[in-house]
Length: 289
Ligand SMILES: NC(=O)c1ccc[n+]([C@@H]2O[C@H](COP(=O)([O-])OP(=O)(O)OC[C@H]3O[C@@H](n4cnc5c(N)ncnc54)[C@H](O)[C@@H]3O)[C@@H](O)[C@H]2O)c1
Image (tube, rainbow, N blue to C red):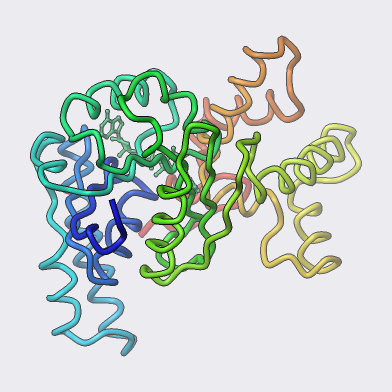
């Protein structure tokens, strides 16, 4: 497969990330098919799409004609089977649960030809986890966007031992053609580049909170004003989802048997439904839109 052969992209999962990845691809000229296991989510994506595009028109960032063109290229498909028909590139952005992704890659393997490029947007699962589930794993890699995917320029392309250079190069080019600046990791590692570096910072920040030195909000103020970080680690976590980070902590606890820093704090927040911006409360409070 060459990059010029890629015309249609399928995004699976219409949550926080998937809907933005889909629209970003449509803005840059790709035909996109988006699906989700939940009809309710698909309904929300339709409302979000209209509101988002209307907002861009109101701000003078897009014309009405442009928004119609983008919408025309982005089809919300009622099923996975419909969504993956005739696509050359699949971007998986479903919930960060291992078994859900395993089932999906098993299904995908049956549904698409063996040269269709398969990617995962997972932040914590490397694509080699799925390599035994698909024929021709040379077409499999991580294509890792950042939140909000319509705004953030960076994409990490992670090449496992199974990923061919051809696939990695195609994905680098796809990222560039969709307005992003990609970095290529030629080995898989936990956290990739950004979350690995952030993880070290965050672990230290959590220890500071657990040692009772100061509050999460004060840690954020320290990072924002002392290091000029645009967002402290806790404010950033409200944006990316408290539940998502808790899934990661739960997995670490299961794998290592040692309770990771912040586990109780995040568990309590998830139990109280304080999932960050999406529920109106996390480390900070937000007005629900
Ligand atoms: N949230 C972030 O900041 C962020 C950043 C980079 C990468 N990611 C990765 O992106 C992926 C999605 O994260 P998110 O924050 O968008 O999650 P989300 O919970 O907002 O959305 C996940 C969606 O997957 C859908 N889903 C679940 N099972 C499905 C299935 N079998 N088929 C189709 N759809 C299914 C759910 O209905 C939901 O709409 C995860 O792998 C995560 O690691 C997230």
